[in-house]
Image 1: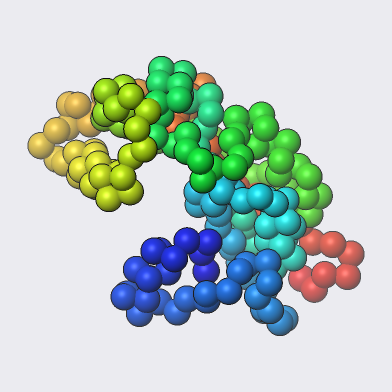
Image 2: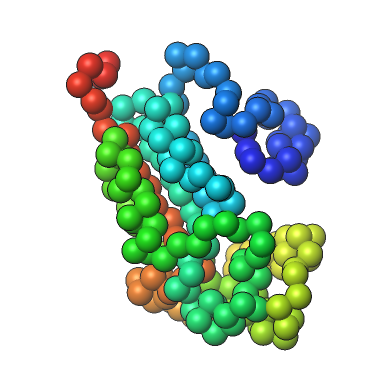
Length: 194
């Protein structure tokens, strides 16, 4: 299940069962889940709190909700401002570490398990710096992500890879990396079956 059609189409090509109904409207019956993920979703939603509440409804006690959003206090945003590719009209919500924490605390059935900042892509900064705020084509975005992932995994680039990972960890420690990730755990309520 996803708010975007392209990921569902891709999943179907891999024989993964998809549900093409809105998350808030689909009748899951009595089915409860171990995890609900919102990877690059919450920033697109007009009513994100409803999605967070629905996730809590659908999780088993002890289940996890994982959220990833662009970090509006990242080094990339600080350097690029409005030229950063993830500042776009389809993003209705923007988060910092502080505002994301405040947002998830609106759902009392969740307990915070992990909060961090992750990923750093210097090639994105270089490309976006030269882009002058023109929208980035999704295909070009995917190509660059694929290319940088391959570079990060290349065994031939051990030295630069080591330096990159150290830089990414340092930025993550200070909540300056590109994304914010938060892991929540559904707490049992009185009357919940354990």
